[in-house]
Image 1 (tube, rainbow, N blue to C red):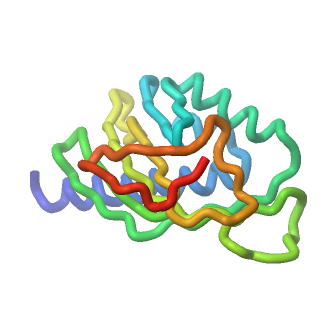
Image 2 (tube, one colour):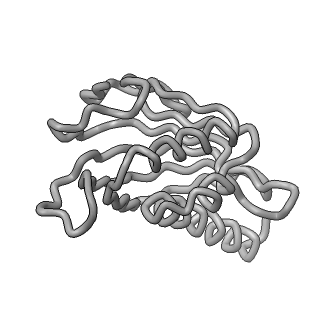
Length: 166
């Protein structure tokens, strides 16, 4: 692969990750779901959503649960570009949550988590998330966890439990 191709892929994957947090935080459900492949796997602790429609149902249920102000701050994106159509990534996401409309009375992190991803270039020329595993590292005392419970596993070898809770 030439350098220009690598740069184009890197920017496309950075844009993909930025679009994920932006669309999630701003309730752009259709745009958010379109970031996943049709057969995507999305896990957070023991919760598993397989396929774009299950992922859509997950985020729709989250949106219908009531007014919630959330911001996800992603950083530290590390990419392993395997080919012109396949890549892996790892990043850190810090989440702030307020159950209600803004402004929130405080800004204590709700969750700090590692994201482990597999990306695929689809037939329409868009890079999408084929796999996203969310591993909980630091969890606020009032964070009951995602729907479906706790736990976790790793795509990139064994992972010690870092105090992951459900």
